[in-house]
Each structure stands twice: as C-alpha cells, then as structure tokens.
Image (cartoon, rainbow, N blue to C red; front, side, top):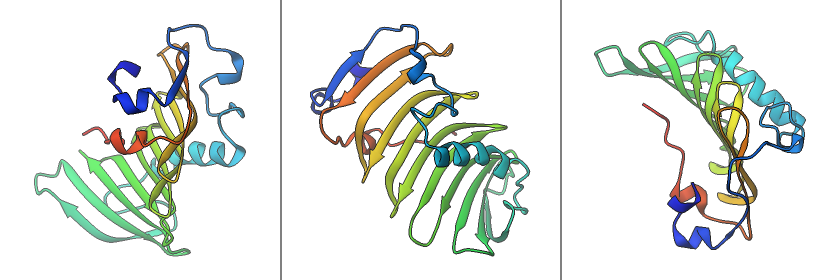
Length: 191
C-alpha cells in the first residue's frame, strides 16, 4: 500500500515491515490486545455493534429520541437524527435498505466518532475530539482489525499497522513526525 501514498508522506514514514509475515503476539489485530487498545477503547469498540444492533429509522439507540428523518423517497436510503435525552449528544444514522450502515455520534463539544457497521461488526471507525480526527482510525474485516492508526489533532502519529485476512502483519510503519495522512485519505464510508 505504501506505493500509493504521495511522496511527501512516504518521506515521513519509516517502514519496518513491508512483506506479509506472521504477526508478533504484541501486535495481534484483535480489540482485546492491550498493546493497541486501551481499556476505554476496548469498551467503546465492543459496545458499538450492540448500540446500533436494534436501531431502526424511527427507534434510535437507547436513551435517544428521533428528531428528524430524511429519505430519498425510494426507501432504500434514509438518514435519521437522534438526540440523547440524558446528555447533549446526537447520532446521525444512515440506513441502506433499512440497515444501519453509518453512524456519526457527537457531543456538543464535538467529541465522538464516525463508524460504519455491518451487522454485528465494525467496518470503519474514526474518533474525533473538537470535531477534529483525534484518537483511533481503524478498518475491520469481521472481528479483526486490518488497519490501525493513531491520530492527534488531525495528524497521524506513531505506528501504522495493516494485517491481511488471516492476521499476518503486512505493514508496520512509523511516522517520523505528525503527518497529514488523514486529510489526504479521509475515510469514506462505503455506499
């Protein structure tokens, strides 16, 4: 994947692993890996599929009420807006054929996440603080992470990992300095 990056980003990355190889235990690509995910991150990621599991276009996550509904008229794409009754948080949830495909959760301070879900699993996840990417930037296949990156104030920092479908490490890289990677490759929810 590194060959697809612009030259300015490539010059800011130290490549450690570029050929698929067995993954060291330290970097196992599961949410329970405390080397990659804090206890709070594990709890949040584990709760997201449950939070949106029974959501419909008129019934939101527990503790929320529907405030607005937009539909394309054909019924295959709808966007529902929910306000939480016990906080200042909102959820903008996009449905495709009646199934949740994307949720944008925010507090009044702009803290929250953008997430794509597929049934009982997360596909993409981006954490935000102050409406700026800040925290984890992840891609999943089933219950396994296939891409892991940490973002601070909109810039990629530290390690970047990618795994193949069977959990072998295919990329381990480290940013020499904070990189604008996220702005050039901002996650686009699949449609």
